[in-house]
Image 1 (tube, helix red, strand yellow):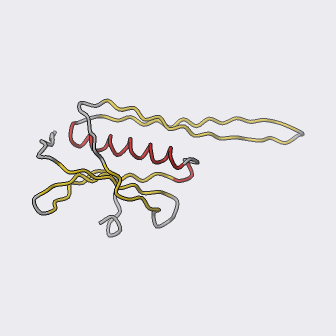
Image 2 (tube, rainbow, N blue to C red; image 1 turned 180 degrees about the vertical axis):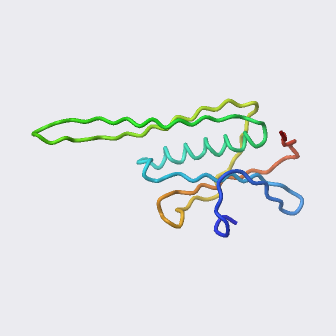
Image 3 (tube, rainbow, N blue to C red; image 1 turned 30 degrees about the horizontal axis):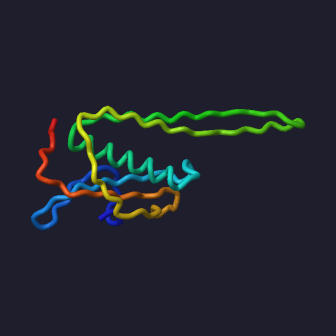
Amino acid sequence: MYNSSAFEGVKVVDDYNQQYVVSVISLEKAKYNNPSIMTRVAQVKAQSQVNTFLNGATINSDIIIKSTERKSNNTLESTVETIESIKQNSYGFTQGLELLTTFDNTEGNRTVFIYMRELKKEKIKTK
C-alpha cells in the first residue's frame, strides 16, 4: 500500500471482519546518528499519531538548532547540533502498537516505520 502511494499518518485498514489502525512515520536519517534513538522517536510519534486519531490528543514538536564556532590557528570551525523536542497533551492512552517493518524511502535519505494494532470496537472521536 505504501509503495503504490507513499503517505505519513494514520489509516484504518479493514481485513475481513476486523479493523486495524496503521501508523506510518518517516524520519530523516541524517538527524539521527543512533539507530535506537531513531526507533524510539518513531515509536513515540506513532503512538502520538494514533492517540490523536483515537482520542483527540495534541502534539507539539520543536526543533532546536545549536551552533557553535571555535577559532584555532586562524581557522574557524563550526559545529551544528539539532535537538528535537516532542511534547504531547493527550486525553487517553494508546498502547499495543506493533512495529511491522522499517525500510528506506526511494531516495534513501529517510527511514520509514510502519506500526499497527488491531482496533477493538473502539469509538473513534470525530470533530
